[in-house]
Image (cartoon, rainbow, N blue to C red; front, side, top):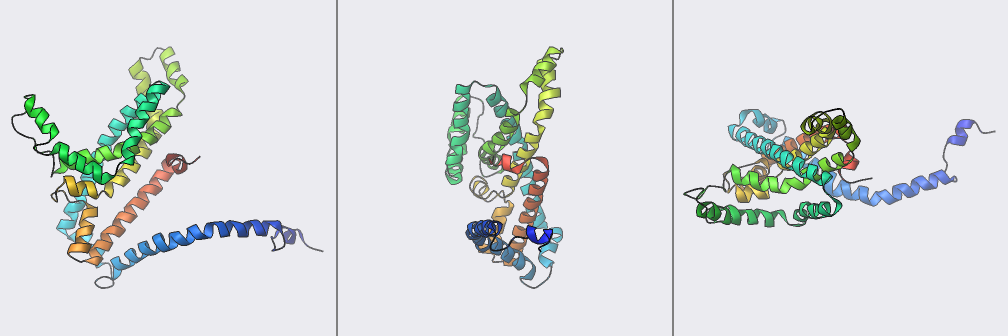
Length: 292
């Protein structure tokens, strides 16, 4: 006579075992692909960071001793923070307009938000290069209108990098904030207005706090993307605004210091992983990335 525990234990002859086996067979190809193309290369990079040129943590010690690395990290953090703040302000305004627009206007606005995502970042960076150069359209308009006497320096500096990065990041800031705003019950704002609050007070004390989870999620998402920018700073910065991705390229391809480059890549990976963990504690990542 079998015990209750034996009855609950799946066996090859029972349906539960077959379902489990089919489940693992279905995910095995994707799991193998992730191990070969993602987990193994990352582990190899982390291994190189502690073994080249010799085993130890000497490469990571350069984070505290190398002035050039500290300067590059400060530049990366400063540009990432500024671009994130500008993106959040613009994304919040656009998201607020999307929520309160009519259905027809909202479709056209969404088209304007999503179309840039279909254009290569390289193409967009070169487009901004054409617009922002000294003989470009923006400087020509400013000079012809009498607002400035000489062309402004809008590229090959942090200004050009920030413009290009904010333009690229806007959709990634708008979509999470809009998703959060869309779920806010507008009756809460209407109730505040009915109790005598002005439009500004109702927005500040009711709508803004309710929209903060989307703002926090968008800020972390945009900041993560900003940390790893390569093409935009390389083209619009002209080599004068060196961020971590371009610095890694220089270390590996030009100076051939695999240990330092791998250490910086590992540091960037750890920072992004920590930010994703923080993001997961604030918002639902499945909802943020479009899952139902």
